Amino acid sequence: MSSPFLRTTAVAASRTLMRAAGRPGGMKKGGTSLNGDARNDLIKKVLFDAPPRPPVRMTPEDMARHETIERAWKLVRQQRKQEQTDALHRKFEMMRKANAELEATSPQLFKHSQTKERHAVFPRQLRTLTDTPPKQIWNYREAAVATPKA
Amino acid sequence: MSLPRFVLRASKRCSSMTTRSFSVNTVARSAAEPTYKAPALGVNRTYDEALKIIAEDKAKRLADVKSMEAKMAELLKAAPSATKDAEISALKEKIFKQEAYAEINEPEVQWKFKNGQIDMSKAVFRYMKSKQFQRETLPIVQQRITQMFVTPDLLPHFTPSLNVHMDFGAGTSPNVPKGSPASSNFFETGSFLLPKDTIQEPVVDVTTFHPDQKYYTIALIDPDTPDVENQTFKQQMHWLISNVPLSATSTKVSKDSSDEILPYLPPHPPKGTTYHRYTLVVAEQPNGGQDKIEMDKSQLSRDVTLSALCSHYKLDVKGLTFFRQVWDKDVSRIYKEVLQQPEPVYGKQPKVDELLDETGQKKKKFVNL
Image 1: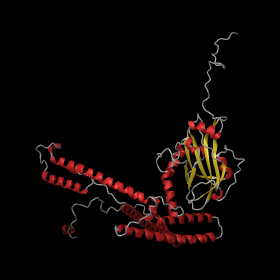
Image 2 (image 1 turned 90 degrees about the vertical axis):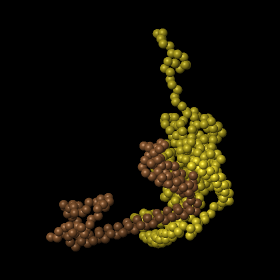
Image 3 (image 1 turned 180 degrees about the vertical axis):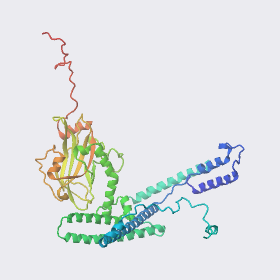
Image 4 (image 1 turned 30 degrees about the horizontal axis):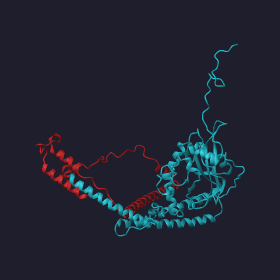
């Protein structure tokens, strides 16, 4: 069962059947399916009756090409990573130098720059993070109309 | 649905048969010397682009190697200091890795490594081979060494850094079927071999990963020889060769270029003992393998232990492999023909029956006073 065309034809055939069965509870007469719903049978057919996808077969030449491409892609990723770490190192080094200079010129300012604010909390005014945007988009015009100008 | 499936299966069988005969022909034609054929350009544009990226990277790395070599020349000229040797070795390691990384991504190198056309004088192949050893062979060797207690019995804890193989000839390996080609006499560390197969000395093959020549001492030791007097076990030296020159390109151990101190004694596990671990140890000679050593043949006996040898001659064990053997009918033959000495048989002390006297008669219950 390695022909890809067979699979597509089988899927297409079952899809037309599906459309014919259409409505929920269709083809109830003589159906032996679960809960008397013919669609369950069809879904099973679509899911399991189609022949399996043929494995990807490559010629040795194509395989060699594929491996080379994979190696090159790995190389590119490595180079990007290296660039990133180098940039971070440079930034860190500049920061360290600036701090050292500040310490040399004004110890008081340096101490002030190094201490954190004691009671700092996360800004409460920020909108709460959600997985999805809200269904109702904020209507600026309406809001502008609704709020009376003080 | 079932009819087309059947038809297809039949057609597939036919096609597979034809391809099989075709592949046999191609193998026969190319068996003499398979050469690398680069995949054609212009078929897959991603491949062409990948080649460009790899070439760019190679040029960059080679330039880096050049600059590092210049630095190396400067370092060698500089006045000796405390950190000079460490710096030089670190730089050497860096150059080696950069040379290997420069070529490792090339499709030709990968193809050659896969097809066994390995040139160990090149840094790439040395790097790939050592990685392969660490990935595939080392875990097995270390597992066998610890599971079969070679490490505390023969040596303190150590990690092999060389790949050692013994080859006793065709058909001796327990894992390989008899009809397979002669190059596959490889046996896994810790396999059981038969005494009749190990009467002749093996061909020892040591894969090292350094390009320069170093001297090694090679010893075959049996740590399981019974020592009746002390009620324990002792070591027996079955084979001892010193001053073996080895490098990445010359891996075979030959007796012509080295000194055989103790000739090969075939393994002969005596009757009544459990399995013997015949261990082949490869040890680097002093001064990083640069020095030759003179062993006194008259003073060395077969009872010498590995630890004594190592401490006396300042040897550093770098690799080992071993096989196991138990008694077999052929061992009697070895004792008779090769060793020409009576065969010992070991066992437990016979039980003393308290009810019998020395003559084997029943002791008298009552004595007439």
